[in-house]
Image (cartoon, rainbow, N blue to C red):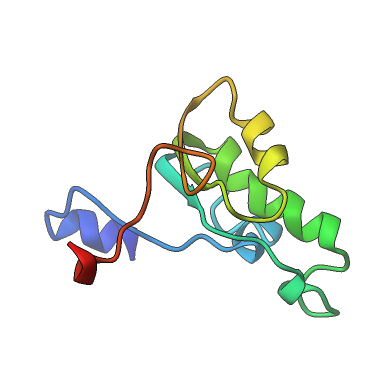
Length: 108
């Protein structure tokens, strides 16, 4: 699909990259311009997904490792782990532990 997008003259692509994509090597070799980490919860643990939360969190964090820049929600569980992981790469945070806030457009 990516090759077809390029063939059709597209220069940018936004895609969701799941922890499963890293687990089964669907995105092996790709480097993303920006990776966004919104949340983590134990909802993908089981026999057909990840065997443990640690395995799930590891594979989900691979997006940060394979992105040139990252944006992370500072209000999610395990934020401190991600903050430490991206300290030496271009990054930004949003949420209560950041000056960046998402505002409801109805209130503007």
